[in-house]
Image 1 (cartoon, rainbow, N blue to C red):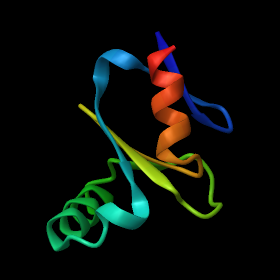
Image 2 (image 1 turned 120 degrees about the vertical axis):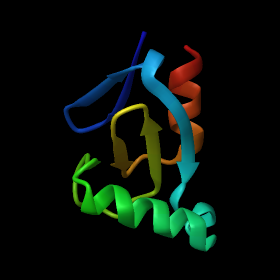
Image 3 (image 1 turned 135 degrees about the vertical axis):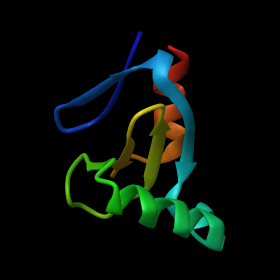
Image 4 (image 1 turned 90 degrees about the vertical axis):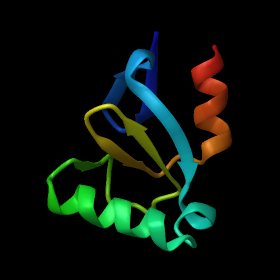
Length: 78
């Protein structure tokens, strides 16, 4: 199965570790540190540069998406 993250970005379900809300998750310093480190390591891929609403952590990358977590979770269950 595949998960469409927006624009032309599609990933497989097998590698997904978690889908997180950008607003509530980044309140925690540990999450901000994780995202900053992933950015420095070049593992962050922006689906587009609209307002980010969620991020999807996979075993190799972190995808920042303009689609909210509820929509992504519904798509993942289909």
